[in-house]
Length: 544
Image (cartoon, rainbow, N blue to C red; front, side, top):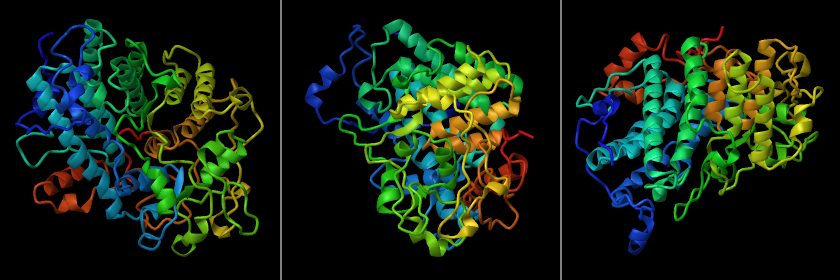
């Protein structure tokens, strides 16, 4: 086994001793040798890995999963899902003054911070300490990939966050600018991919030291390399408008890297029940037990207007018996009078998510659409924009188990539909409002770059469902797809209705914390680029 290589970023992070907790996913200790036998005869790689159950603990906190669906609801459903216009909340939280109408709601905006820094990162540091102690750089590499994946979602919600200097001796951790955070992401991903490549070359692809604790890929390092390369591509595209030269290089490097990016659905990153670890999708409890979320009006507009075969896979028929009820109905984001109408809206279409539906992390379709966008602007993405775009649609249809991708891709007549609200007409979106997209599906070689970009991102938005966080980030970055503005904006001018919300504010408890308060105040003054409101654009949000 080669000598352990401690990277600078990890050296900064590991500055104190972490107590080790044994976290085993299986109680079958009598089969320890069977589970941990190294087929290649490298005896020290397959033994004594029970402590690395922290990998599972990390994975369960990227999208917070547990018996209680409330953390997922607050971190994912009531932020990314509603701001991406995938889903709309059907409840009367604080009357009509909550995140859906652009009023910062502390009970929601504090949860991503809490999950990231109190639940996710402590498990990361335990892996780092174990990997250092045991001389296992491959474990460190896998942990770094997970850290970047989890924390890019956090910085894309808030902006500057504590990152590069986390884990230091000081209790008051300085914030990093988002530009610095992204540079660190790329460095960490490159280090991790290099390490895992070297491991596979040395011991073979069949060696899976942590297969019992990896709920995504069962310890398959080749799949993790593809995942990391696709994440590099995602993040490179994210900074396209902020740093186009760097974005192009990083994106092309990701495509050309060993093992490349995810291209097949067999490599999709999905969190699902594995062995004795039962994963119940939290969205099932939110739409069913809580009755707190329904299809958005935008989803109805696109899926019904395009006659999209994924519609019955994504959503259930409405149960409303009101006059003029349609088979599938969505609710306008920021709907007016939700405080008194929410029971009526609960009869609209629910997400077609069961307890056994996997939690989606990253899928092949996204990779193809990222490449299509790159090719559109002249990057070397190993294909033309049109072919990559069509392949993205095919992969999404294949993932959802529906047919008709070819006919759908060639349709040049169907357009998104206007949406009439049968409960309160003021929440409707008419054809004459100018708010309904006119983009068709079929690729048009004569279209402008901007028109083609709208096609790519619209189909990408549809394929990403139900990952609202990523869909919201892509909307902010590109202004596509064309999403209906909220019907009610109670932000008092802090958020522009037409531009829509750009970030969430920092939690009040951060300001109130005696040690953290000065750091968040300093970050807002020096790093954020505007007031701590939902209207301030992030560093990468630079499209004119």
